[in-house]
Image (cartoon, rainbow, N blue to C red; front, side, top):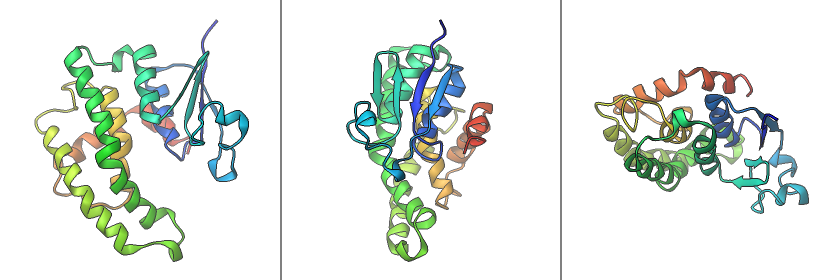
Length: 205
């Protein structure tokens, strides 16, 4: 019997990262629409999947996981050998960049995005958005330098490391953060978002 994983959340959220991974690796999945704005991630049923009350969450048989980038590591490791690093050293780099995306890049990028695009005009803080955009330049510079002379983070091939990091970095462009001084990053992000799997997820949004 073919396995169908369940991915809870809406495509217009961090759930997009996991849907992108599922499309890349071709695992059958069911996107269980869960709208956190309507309190659907706070029901007793959902809290059994993710006690934090956030989306996304994953259900794969008896396995239940939360945290979008961890879910992606699991999906790639189990179902997507073509996206999994081929050496222990590159596994370490994959974990490194995945954790780095959350600890160094996501906060300033998301802050700028929220205050420039998502919040109603009356609730936006222009100074806070500009400060976050400025703070984002340091990690974006680190990423740009890491991509110099290579098409993808681990070398010639697109992997889960690229998907995880690109799913965070693409918010920089959405937040109108200046990437003009980051040519290698811009080219890499273009390669990642030109992938057919990413296009299929975009059509879900």
